[in-house]
Length: 153
Image 1 (cartoon, rainbow, N blue to C red):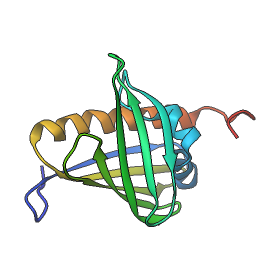
Image 2: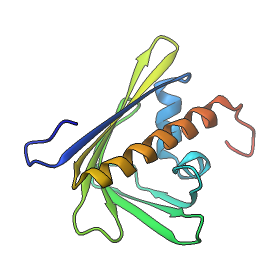
Image 3: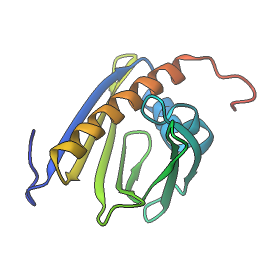
Image 4: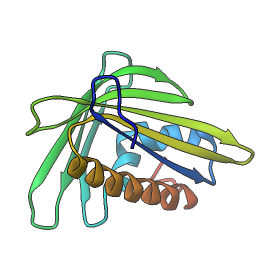
């Protein structure tokens, strides 16, 4: 696993999804859509708030099978629709923030989603993030493959 200059772990997760960069960017940044696919298996996104602008903040609530809810929050550093998002990542119980970059790169009629998660403190956290991002990207792929109904618009 690569390490960043400050010696923290870096995780890169990639998934090619049958959707346009614009569609995936919207699913990633619109709170009602985000709630439909976000989270690792067994976790339900019960709330999402997104102020999509540089300096804006987001909050995502993850309810675990045991009923506990964990909030993830952060600030947007770069917002370049429909190609890239860069934001801080902080669990409510964490002392320091990590950093996430999400790129949406067109590949013909598909898009490669590349998530780079930096400043991870240890191998255990990196492994949890790996499972979480894999599951999130699987959920995103399923979500965008469904037709949009008037209630979703």
